[in-house]
Amino acid sequence: MMKRTYIGERCTVARALEVVGERWTLLIVRDGLLGVTRFEEFHDALGIPRNVLTARLNLLVEHDVLDRVPYQARPVRYEYLLTAKGRGLAPVVRALLEWGDEHYSDDLPEPPTKVVHAGCGGRVLSRTVCENCHRPLASSDITAVRVTGG
Image (cartoon, rainbow, N blue to C red; front, side, top):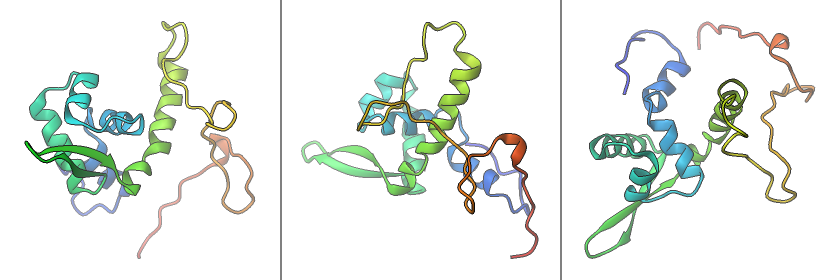
């Protein structure tokens, strides 16, 4: 986990990175979105050291991104299920997937993961759309505005 370096700064990006900014964390969320739920499944899929995986899972449970739910009584074993807050990270993971496909898949015959519409099989695309007029926007159409106060 990152050390807080934004003391006094009101930035929700920095706050979100406190939870999901470490290199393994979004990969855990990605695998959760793909249906992985158990410690050993995460460990096998990611090759992450056990102590690091334990720390990341605990952080995600602490921040209500995952729920830790028993699935076996003797011995007690748990699975990690995405909460609504965790599933809310799906657009973030999809956007990173698209960005990675665009910039880091040159040596691959095709991108390794496709996000498709379960209904028709069409590729799901992340689009930025205006809340008011519902038009798709290019990066050049967008500006960020700092809000003071409140």
